[in-house]
Image (cartoon, rainbow, N blue to C red; front, side, top):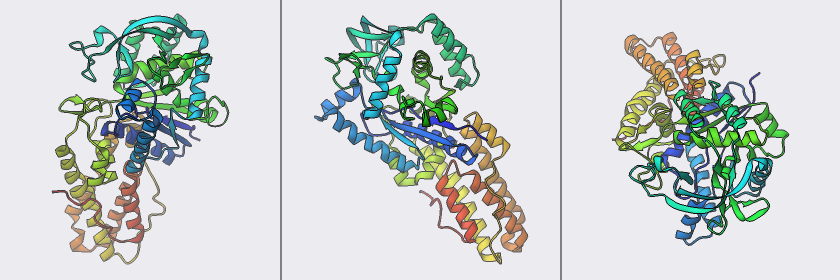
Length: 469
């Protein structure tokens, strides 16, 4: 029997409209969650919104709103994004919720032996919500947000990383499945070997009043990353260590999805916090590449974003899911243009899958005496797809499915069943189309359902993907 499976995305900041970059992470995680469910695993899929920090506080001030009201309005948009993309989550955690606040404070208490207060001077990037080193900057600016960091001098609480914990993290990172892809695992090891050490975990309330109060010190608020990372376990009802937490975190397989620029936070800071609290480390962190525009990372701060809502409105949910799964490299950056999206849509969906379904089911409806028996075919995943999915290569799994679509198209061209009316040939085509429809379930669930329903009813469906001129 498959182990319980827990998967989570990172939590996006609620300082602007959702963009296609976070849609990528949602869709990737959803495909994995759906595939695991189809394979028989009990799955818990978590996402949510990151609602504290200086970035949110300043954005709320600029909008002349209270931070909580501001966060509420954008959290609603991220819930709407889930609906637009047909995301099958089991939890939507908000870091301003009372249960999460209590969990973050309890995690602080359990890490107390590693925490001390210090005076500190550093360069702070509000966009990253992180301190940067001079060596991180390009022409004096953050390479991700193209803004100069603020020089900050203040008193903070620091998480003190011991030599023993560094050794524990290195042992963890030396496990081949701790990080995917391998390049990010090596990056994390390099971080530890070249100076990963103590890090700030609070901000003065005087400068940042919007945050979770530090237990026992109301003059400080919990650093937004310490706060937000706790969601991975607060979503499972921790600090209650029974129920979902025990089933999915302790006894299950745990996977975190994150952007490739978050290695230091997800695989070092978070794991050492878990270590200090005597909680099992995450089994695997999967780092995806960014969707770029003209070679630049899409960012709300820069303003070069694409709205996933607009794409869904124009092309449909499954067209967006298809593109993100097949045409975006899972681990490296991929440039996005509307022209490239439209070209892929017309070539592979309108003229590809949609046309194939129409051709096969038109012949079936016109020539078969009865419905094709597909009850005994069931959901079957090929060894190739299973292996690709185990390595989070969604693109290769999709390439395999589209190869099967091309093979079926070729067979139709060669056998010309519209001329012969050969019922056995047509039945075989229908069964193979059914198998394709089943394989599409995790990736394009609505399209899969329409194909299967059409076959069960022996009816040509409405045009699945109208061509866009």
